[in-house]
Length: 376
Image (spheres, rainbow, N blue to C red):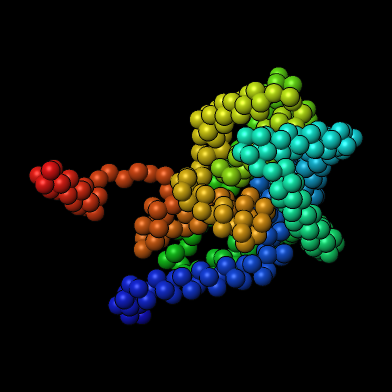
């Protein structure tokens, strides 16, 4: 059977693989309201498993240990949500003043366009009115859709603690199922993949929470020093957005810059915000991430950006958060299967030494350059 499969032409194999990936993506897309909460619940269950084990070691029954672990996790998340909501309430109180300042900035932009680019004020006002109308229509559509789905989403996401409890309670049953459906010759390799994946997820998520705390402090401190309004709220939002690789960092920097443009009279303030955030990103990329987060998640930058964009387009913001840990699990599996190791190499960060193809390309480029020089 294996020899028959190996004799299939490569283009047919890759076509089957592509069709399979598209079919899987379609199934995940139509079932995302169920699958995404399950994925988050599984990650939280793996993260809480050491705490459950600790409670069991001090003679607490497993059922009670699971409930206590979930309560601890729930309290931490609730505390974060409460803190952010308090900050949002202060922002809501000053929202009318913010809108007024934003309108003044828009008027300054219109004046600059009219003066510097010699565009009639009437044409500028017309275009801005069109943009405003379009934005309001899109906002109304989004709000209407959100209200329609709100009850459904609340019910589904409130099931996450239930899913977490069931994953932890039926842990032995799920492991026994995987053992029974696995071939005896592959059980050791499958066990190693599961252990490595579990350690990776625990290290990644724990490091991620620590990174969020550190980045929140750094962002908030930087903005407070610069005197930017809503510094703590923006600092926390920036730290949460920073979880999304590359894209989140850009949005996290753009938000306080926009606030600085609206609330400050000088363009120096947004430039200072940019400088502070670039410095914080330098600290994050070179010190926090390598030692706190990325000790086990070794996905290269190109793949990280691509999977974040793909998961974001399929599953929204929740998919962006899941992209890296799920891709890291896939890489662990690819690295353990001999025939799939090249794909695991493609996802990784290791830079190989000179390869046969690389040397051929270099020789070709060199001969082409030498030929051009002779012609000159």
